[in-house]
Image 1 (tube, rainbow, N blue to C red):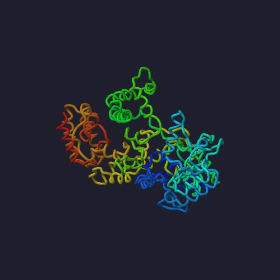
Image 2 (image 1 turned 60 degrees about the vertical axis):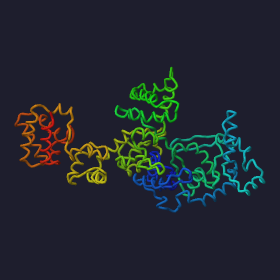
Image 3 (image 1 turned 120 degrees about the vertical axis):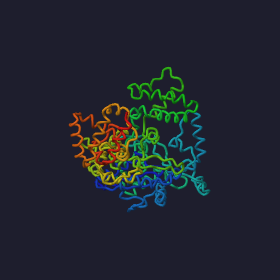
Image 4 (image 1 turned 90 degrees about the vertical axis):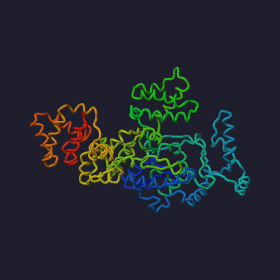
Length: 574
């Protein structure tokens, strides 16, 4: 088999989306599985949408994920440069080449002229397309005489280069994931290949770069499927062998019923209502929010989706809300979904250079890179034996494009958190210590004790910060006591029992094993069940009936703090 070379070719028009990370990951895994090479290429020909800092963000995000390119703008390589804006001379050479074939022509139509033609078609109820039916009547080198074309060129009239789509040909297209399909060229238009500033569009630059860089397989999102016919013909026009193609399915929005609960229904309703009235300003926010909340209140009901499809007796606003919600809870995962429901869709925080708005990333939200990548890998691919926890190396050994799913993969916030919890358990106490010390948490405690706290608390943690949040009682005494727990654990005798226990603790070595025996002996000598002692003791130390073993807590906070907390509870719990 030919040497496998794949490329990830993002545009620096914003942060890297979850779908982009998955494309890069599948490229990387396929290359490593086949002993090939993974190339990062920056496709920055769309200067109008260029976002400052986006390219650096893409490279940093991939590095955090462990997706390291063999060749890239920063690393270089034998096919450099890897930034399209630096490859103009290469594109110019191939523009000249394709214009010598019967597959391309130059067009002088201005945007205003095309708008006029489009409006004429629309006035007749027709849709305008620049294709084999219309190009002979427009301002291009096919319709004009050689003299007129030369005159326009001599006058420096701006022009674009268009692809001349063949007439009535059936193209047989092959996709590794989706199998065989066909398309008739009469359904395809004459796409612009080179813009009037001389820079190629995505379509032309893409196939030139893939050819020049000896790319063997193109793995990309399904949004490029409609372009497969054009790209196949471009390879034909240039006399090149086309790479193999694989188009990945969409990452879909999560099931909304898993995201809405009593605590967040109001904030989510507000977010949806604000978006709705922005698009439908004839309706008031309050009325819209009331209707939206009425639907969300039934979101966990089996009838929820059928309610959205019912339309008898709907007034105008209810009908509009239903249409809005149906679109808003289905389809491709977007940044807006993350904003509404409180989960990231980008690997790292991204600050918009124009607005200053910060979009939260997985890294800053407390996800471990290995957990994040493991979650992303399984959004559309199934390893053998339905394994779920795999390292990057293990994924690379198993990865197979033929096992990538055709259907869209539904994102799950719960599942992403599950993956992070699994990896927290796999991470050493020392590594978690390093993560916590680099956080902005107030960890004013000896390192040795902090490592022990991490060991005790990580089993319950989804994110590193949970070790601190769930174990805050290790760092500070409770200032209040859970009311329900107090009623359960405390009675008229409890203060006396704990007072006596505190006296016993003053004369003992403060290690967990010894403390466990002391408390056990105390309860036995008093003829008390362990619950009568342990529950109020835990409440005194923690403020709630939760946490690891009580003797472990006592050892870590020490004798003086343990006695102080018991006395505070005696004085404050009624």
